[in-house]
Amino acid sequence: MSDYYVYIVASFSKRLYVGVTNDLVRRVYQHKHGELDGFTKRYRIGRLVYYEVHRDIREAIKREKVIKGWRREKKVELIEQMNEKWQDLSVDWYDDQKIEPVRR
Image 1 (tube, rainbow, N blue to C red):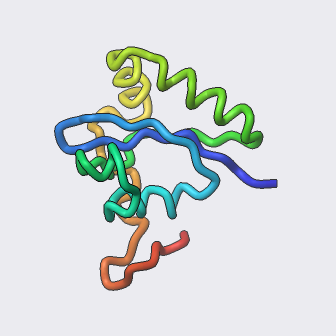
Image 2 (cartoon, one colour; image 1 turned 90 degrees about the horizontal axis):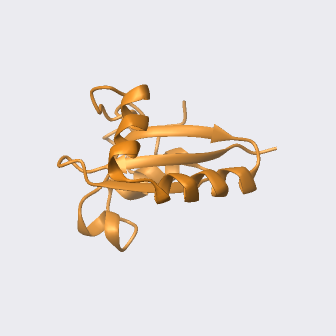
């Protein structure tokens, strides 16, 4: 059985994007390196500031939709419960000498 992740990535100016994935390491890498066309690439959104794990994809998608529907202030509260200083939670996930993510 797989894990599914609801996550929030942010730009340095704290612009937010909420997503869901079954491979958080790969998806954050894609955001960081501008591999996904659209909003996150346009605004350089790639710092992982929040995530939660779900065992059921339907629950993860439901939770993603709930969070996406929140006002910004509520999303900020959620982030700061886990990550008060908005640090990049994926900072040591990747080996800068390689293109591929490092699995830990």
